[in-house]
Length: 177
Image (cartoon, rainbow, N blue to C red; front, side, top):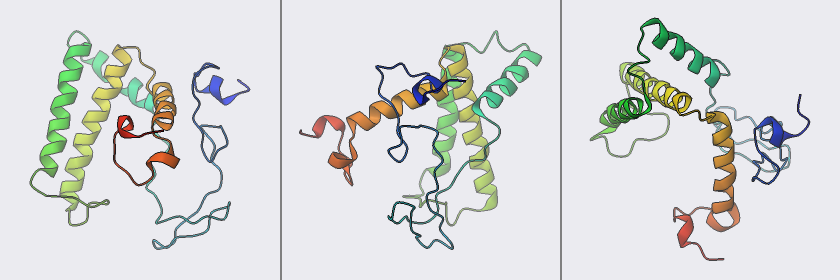
């Protein structure tokens, strides 16, 4: 077992690190807050939070998804068709199908109020297709997606320091030091 969080996340000593609650541990699960019926509650450090955030189920993991898709593809002898370019084009097509579900609706609020269960299920299917193709594309390109995400988030923290960008949608090149 590795002793430091950078090693565990596949980051080298000279790469930027990801911090959660300033701990330096990208996988820290410190007590934060819970919202009851959407009411803000106090954080451990004295701050407050808004309504409870949505969280994903812990399983299946990204590796589980990669393995299930690899087995699915192997069982059908589809690897001959699942090369990076083809997977990318399939991914783009699936993103288009997600886009169609939002087309002509104007702005859609978080939580999708007004959507039927059937519409939500259709969205879940299309987002699943996007995820499956993304994970398989990463596999074929030999990109360890979870570690790549950690590195990218660390870079984003450097490009978009909260003290400079809070509440603004400007691109990082528009900020002055």
